[in-house]
Length: 116
Image (cartoon, rainbow, N blue to C red; front, side, top):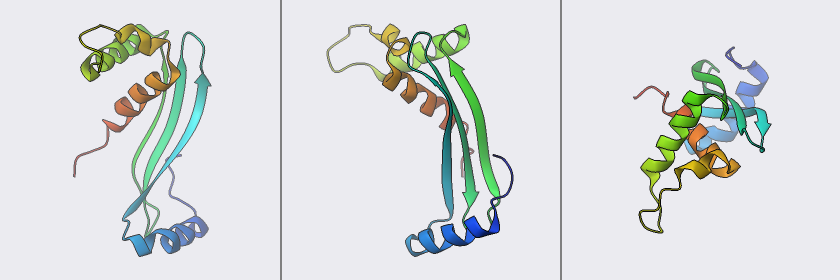
């Protein structure tokens, strides 16, 4: 997942995305998933330059709500989002809701992208 993209794939990506002026393509694989408590979601991501296939950024992580640091970070993420129903504290539900947990995983993963 961190090696340069194959030439055949680079050619296809360049032909598909060049008309849009894309500089890179983001590839994401789900490597682990458990929708039951404790929630688990693994993602492998890489950002590859369209012209030559060089990997600009890559991440490969498994987030499990059974890990106390992951659970606390997910709760903190949920608390920062707030709610449209007032000040009710529902941050514990992120550890029981696969969709909300996936939102945390995406936020945590993509926060490692380097700034331009």
